[in-house]
Image (cartoon, rainbow, N blue to C red; front, side, top):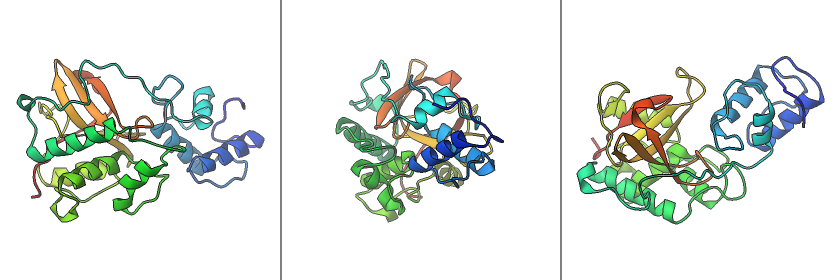
Length: 257
């Protein structure tokens, strides 16, 4: 495996990197020169993939051992301990709008069915199902499309009844909700409820990349979520609510405005 590769390098190691990026769905010119285009592709890959221990890669545009490992291996399955059963709906007392809770219930059924990637990163019948209403093919990131799909099913498959436009973009979902006055930025004291959207930034706060999941519940200082595309499958995760990293905010989605 090549040594560390970074912007400004040239040669066979860079060509190998570029070929590998292309094979993983991050198109670049294969010219053996590590320029801005290759660096952007590396950062995009790092923002969406994990190291051998299931931890997010550092988004620095440099290809060291952990990024090389991730480029040449499928996403690791994350075994996440949790004090809640993600396959069970949270109690009514936990709150949540009727539509949000219905979308969450649909997400739970996808979790129980084993939904996730099949045959490679961002690929397989589950991923195609989530991306299709957004007009995208497999190979694209699918976290926001998964959330959109759950709300589409909660609206009986009718896009006109959805509370937001079906979107493959996490930040776009939050922007739509913000325009409706139902988004809540970090530090505002909002306590998320079941079926709410939770959105993070990736790569940079001022950038365009993001990640989104559904709130399962907030309990005993821990936020429990259901997310697609953080690991290869739809999965539950937990966070210390007071120390959530890269958080953009929440959205309490009700009926179509």
